[in-house]
Image 1 (cartoon, one colour):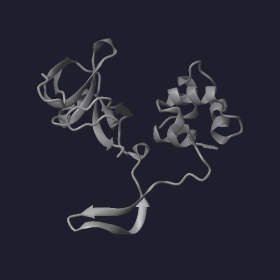
Image 2: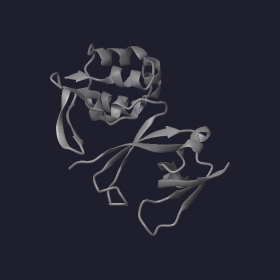
Image 3: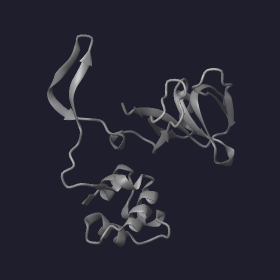
Length: 190
């Protein structure tokens, strides 16, 4: 089994020391380096600790030796499905480029355009970026460890208004959210 700790750590712009400090309990950069390179066995305990430190699911840290990047092989146009001139790598949520941390939202009950089982990948932004998120689907933290999800329909210096995706729901107004995460990718099983 080959691990992806180094790849994920670098995608997130973290050093070995950063990951070591984020582990609970904290560890050393040398230990993280040994786990990355396979010089030390990646146990289930270590996998869970490092996944929590990197804020990813533990399964993302490992891949089989023969794992291959999924490929785009065809496209659907107004003329129908047609082959691509050459297969190319598919976009995976871990390959989404941009500033801000990626987070994911699982849809358990149908809501508006979202179906049960959908996975929505979102990118977190600070208050300085809120103006450009207007009329986009966002996830917002609320008090008490709760969240609001829906279309950001209004904002001012202190508040944002979010309209949930289900028809008939009233807008939710949130005072001074620390961040908003804007939807960037929908993953839907068929």
